[in-house]
Length: 153
Image 1: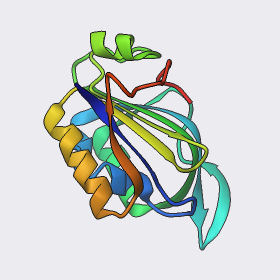
Image 2 (image 1 turned 45 degrees about the vertical axis):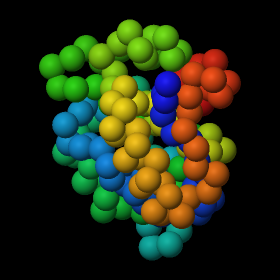
Image 3 (image 1 turned 90 degrees about the vertical axis):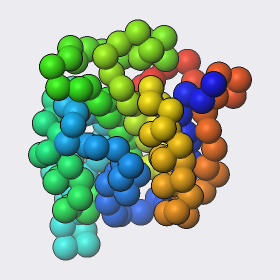
């Protein structure tokens, strides 16, 4: 069974989170954010962080932020919860499966992306979206090949 998709993005400034999440209705979720990512202003890395750890961001605001800014992602943990559902900590795949969280996006070491999603149609769309953006080493995460022990970076 497909759990999600993994791939590599270029280690450079850009709006890669926006590009990665294009198949997802970002505005339909509340996003729990964490990690280390910085805005890029006039081609230079800024001190201002893109996310604050464990902040909950409304989907429409989050979508606009990802779409209209340039940023540099180092480590990222994003967790999408539908409106009206409980936002809680999700640290393992089992916790994810039992929670209201519908999508987890992780970026490690600037480039290594793993996305877990409960909706099989969205998993396929994320896979083909990654191919369309020429991301590298695109593959499905399955029950058989998933070596991750936690959904954190």
